[in-house]
Structures are given as C-alpha cells and as structure tokens.
Length: 227
Image 1 (cartoon, rainbow, N blue to C red):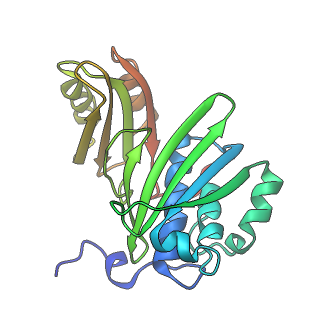
Image 2 (image 1 turned 60 degrees about the vertical axis):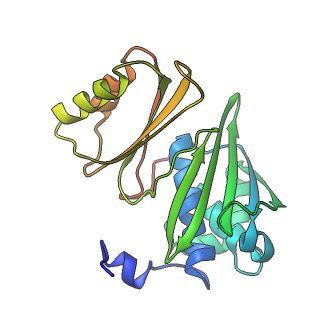
C-alpha cells in the first residue's frame, strides 16, 4: 500500500480515545465551520451508526463541537467544548438516526445564524481522516486534505471552464473536482481541491462570474480562523 503522507500512517495528534470518534469528528466539525464561514448561533447534529451508539462515551459530541469552535484535534479545550460553545453563544442539539446506506461514523450538521443555513454531512473513515459527501443537498465528495473551494452557481455552458481559467491564471493547480446539480440549468455546486491556497483576489474573480451565487474556501491546512 502506498501512502500520500505521514498522517495516513500514524494518524493525528489528538485529544480522546479514538481517531475515528474524536479526531475525525473534530475535522468534520471544523470543515462545517469553514464552509459556513463564521460561528453559527445554532447547530443541529444528527449522528448515525457507531457515532450514534457511542458518541457520549467516546467524546464524539465534544469533538464535533470542538471542531465547530475551530479547535485543532489536539486542543485540550475540546474536553470542555460543550460549555465553551454555550459561553460563545452557540446552541447545540444532538439526535440519532438510522441509515444503512451511510458510513457507520457519519454526522449531519445543520448550522444556522440568522437567516443563513448550511447542511454538511461527513464521515470519519479512520486515522483521523474524513470524507464529506453532502453540502446543502448536493451530492459531492471531498476529503479536506487540501484547500477546498466551494462554488455555488447556476448550471450553464462554460461555467467550469471560466472557473478553471481563473485559477490557472493565478498559478493554482487543481488536484480534484466534483460537481453536482439539482437539474439542467438549475442550482449547482462545484467543489475544487487545490494544491495551493486560493487567494481572496481569485475568489473575488470567481464570485463576479455570471450565475455564481456564493464562493467559499474551506481550508484545514492552516491554523484557526479568526473569530
């Protein structure tokens, strides 16, 4: 077996007993926070499979909330994440569900602030690694191992070419791309993993493209976001 990096072999530095139930859960929470772009004031978390069965005993609830607070996997504040979330004004509720079609370590997070809402579904697949497989009803898959650009737009001819031209002209190499749409010429989401961080200037150029409604960068390769 060939590994892409040391993280794939030895796993992450972390707080908690399980890389799948704690480190992976932290990364799912952080990914959802980065996609949302700010601290939500309300979060509903639905857990499936072994997450649902053992989330209190393994600290998955603390890990997910710690991620939503943008803590790293080894941040000792994760132990007090529920209390710290309350102090920060973020109300969190948990529920469990059953769905045989999803990975056993799966969480669906609904983040809200005012009239804004994002729904992010992700799975912890071992060794602290995650796979996100849904954002706001779009079936897209990505790992958050690289800087990840999410572009919400209307489906139209030439849209992908326009986006990739801007990134290429800015010296950004695309490593992976996934696209889903609600229907022909309807709402669509393009997810692009890049080898380099995408600058605010390039994001603004993409945001100005016709039929683009929202652009966000979800990047876990750096440090915490500013609050």
